[in-house]
Image (tube, rainbow over all chains, first blue to last red; front, side):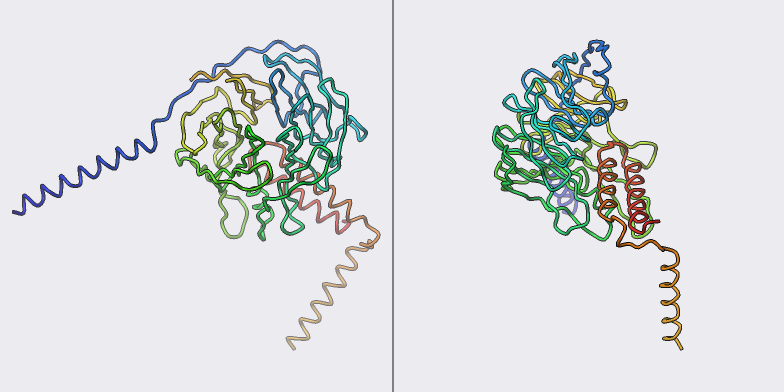
Length: 331
Length: 72
């Protein structure tokens, strides 16, 4: 009798395990391994093609735009990496830039976050300045959501309470919406990391916000600024923890992504990677996550990348040396 | 006795502060300090360096702000 009961229990447990595993497999299908094939770049012998401190990239149908904070210019390349020209120079006047940190292009207009001049400037694609507006903070990144509205991000200073990190302006410089309050505590250093965000514009004027640490959900905002959803990201894109090396109560940063991009229904999230033991830096592994947060594929790049944009099946990335690298994604 | 010691200590701290920081804080442009601090932080946050390094630079920015505000 006892033997029969044991056998029944064993069968019950085995069946339960099989059903559970099958259900998980349906819910979390296998992860594909996509390849990144590097494309050789032209020589670009002119001095202006050299990238001193590339800190933001943008892409349109024909060209790649890279902000060089050192040269205070936006450098324009063909999609095969051939240097075309630069826009802007150091200064405070119209068409001049001081620590440009973000760029976006839409409808033949180039919008640049002119950080230390605390303004957003517009250029035509030939490089002629065609408008600007001041903002009451140091703009970090700018994203043209539509031909009429711009999303401008800012890093919180940690001084006034309830600082907002997202600001939507119309192209004439009128503030339409502000939101996403910065997290604040008694440790401004910890807060500086917790408040590091990345923005991926969607395709219909909407946009997504990712926190670089501590949060594994992607926030989805409508173009009006209304939060329309939270996308929990598959746990297989794991947190990379890092302990802060300062005295006092132990604080741990949970590194989530170093850089991110959105292209045709997929998020490309680069995981931070361990650097020299306890530190976290840019990594080589990109997780491809669908709109529901499921991990669809991973891409291992031949080198760590700091920032990247994706378009037309290609990854345009900045490597450790500040150089441009282009990879073709093979599914 | 305890109260007296506290008052004496507080007085000593104030006198030391007055001797140690002779510059008039009012005459010093504190806004410029905060602007430099903002620029320093923005530089650090846009470094795209590993986080430990960014953390150290942010700390240096904070120390520099303290020194600037106190006109040291």
